[in-house]
Length: 326
Image (cartoon, rainbow, N blue to C red; front, side, top):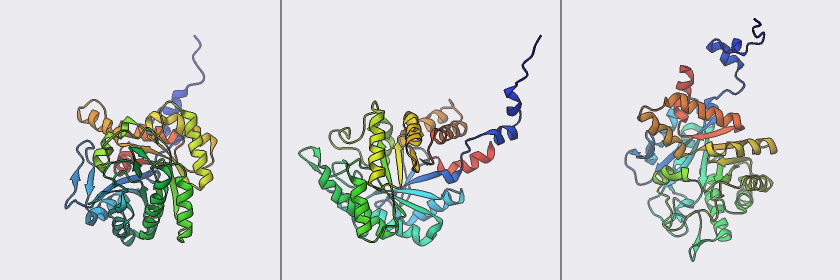
């Protein structure tokens, strides 16, 4: 009887062997922690559809971010829930806006130890819940660009290191880059939500950010999941307009897009492990159907393996502890 001379299992025999042979290693430094800051809150408000996630009062955001830093997570993405909303989302660019206040607190507390990113969109700030100015039931692309410029500049003035336009408005990166440069913020980077799909995985986020559209959908400006080539065109446009980092959102159903983008473009690439992806894992774990730690690490490693350099994830604060337990 002839037994195999090549035994692939030799290099899987122990945990140490498996670790040194792994080509893709997840690290907390790969992660960006999304944080919801609520101008109306007096204490942390649990987000029902996202277990262990909260909306934080402005005066408590530093405590939350400190916990992330202690877990070696070096970057946060801020989303704001304002006191007042209007048709143009004017509180999104107010000097004393909720995100602007949070940025100043975080910058004053942590300085350059922390990378502060701020979402540039209007859905949390408009009464209608769409990502820009609306006229006759339709989103007005070019009028929205001017508002996004104001939002990005106000965030840069507050101390943001990176602004992240997520509205999927044509030309948003070009207009924001020009506005930042004209205002003297040429060193502030742009991370563009370049390939952002009109996804059913965003449901829990809309509860968290109070951003559900009051009419219609966002399908006329976010992408359809059946058109992968469109994503590459969007990413290329954003790079040409001056994006420093590009993003694919969501992640799990779009690993092929992440891979294709990394193969085609030599640019830093982020992926957003979105609220619905997080909540599915949480719900299944709470029912005892899966091991949350094992599944979350497998998902995050898979996103990185597909080509993502950075991953936005609500699991960010847990990863260091989980990795130490593997």
